[in-house]
Length: 350
Image 1: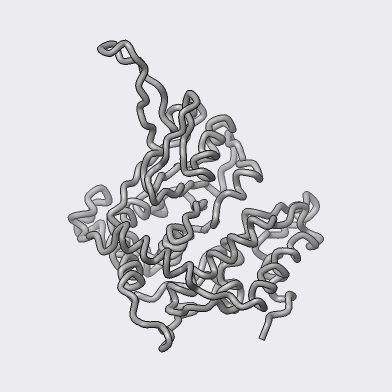
Image 2: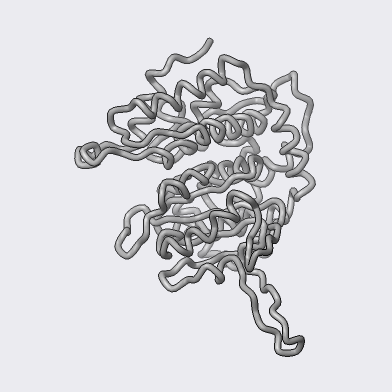
């Protein structure tokens, strides 16, 4: 497996069917950029995760970009495409703590954030931390829990803290939420409101594997692969918090030309004027596109952002921040198709 990060692009640039080609958009490190141990360590993570998960390199790269930007990820895929295994393998390769919460209709906010518990020995209430106190929280089927419980994550996602009984408690660093949704089954679900969707940095589609990839999955299980035993699969830590912090500092130094900043704004503003959209992208979406483009440029071995970087991240960064008009939905219009048309029509700076 190559150590280069795979591309996030649309149409001719590599985007196909809601996911990305592994071989699209390869970038050799720029001669002007010195070899970076932090970059190598983070790109090695993809190789480690590949020991447990087959054919999801682009999703791993998306999660790495989210960690570099300190943002959250919405994972969409049918059951059985290794969403939980991917997060566990990624956490192992990065030496990060992870917790999984199965979101159900009876889940309460305190089950996520933690709550005050009476201690009979001291006759006092003490705070018992919830599963949100981790580095990567896997919120499985987040749309199956009522809005009250969904909203319990808002403060954690935005402020990196939890407030209980008037006391704010900081979450570990790094901290991101990786929330999953089933794209085909909506009965008994509570769709996330736009305000909460907008707090997710990226929305990544996890496709079903191709024939060759599925054969490899079955072959691994035939020789004894156990998804609950990552150590036996050979997944080992190759990076950690130190490398991640160094990488974040490097990403912050990636330069963005005024013309590229204008291009980001033009793409975002075009979503607000698209006839098929009743809801366009907010300025928060523009800053998210900027930050993810910088992270992708750095992973690709460059210290500057190009328009192709912006194109590469536009779909995963913007697709969940727009809303189709009802008539467009009835006509079978897809969000990604509209965004692809916008990217094809907005002038690219030279």
